[in-house]
Length: 259
Image (tube, rainbow, N blue to C red):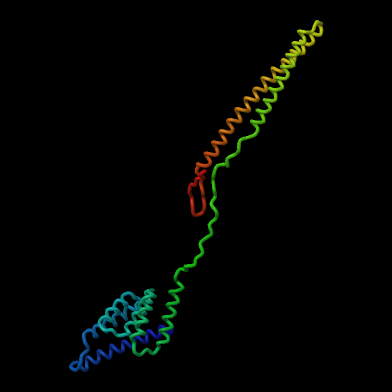
């Protein structure tokens, strides 16, 4: 209410100046008429006052600038500041208020205007974005990659070793069978020779089974071990050169692990 009242008082004061200037021009037309710049400035002010009261602040500010260019009356700067405030141009209003305070010789309510300028500056400062905004925390990236490379299995070698042991057992049974066979040949008693020969056949059969089965286990274990070693080597090479996907809230891309 105080600011509105102050503004109205200033408008009334300037309107009074206009009336005095016009009346002086009527009664002393032959004495010292006002220069045309001042007369035009007063006309522009009167027109701007009508726009200001109608809420047409942009037109009012434009007319006040024209009036001040013609006749630099400091009070025009005050009214220009009020019009700029109505437009929302806070920086422009501060500039014109400060020009008015610097150029006017007698200001009754200088303190009130200075406080108004301080309030507008505080509003501008509060509206500035903060430079110390804390960046949102970023979660660690989620890595999607292949399973880590594994060492070669031991089972193929265990199988191969077992097969070798069976083959060894088959060789032993084969030697025993051969010894039994030779003993049967040398045995003069036919009955004992027949028993030895029968035992030799059984040992020979066991030897053949163990040699065949053990050999298969040995060959299979060795082949399995070789293939497993090659696969493990291939996995290590592929894992070292194969790209993986990294995903985070702010990043999505590929990465490689070089050997």
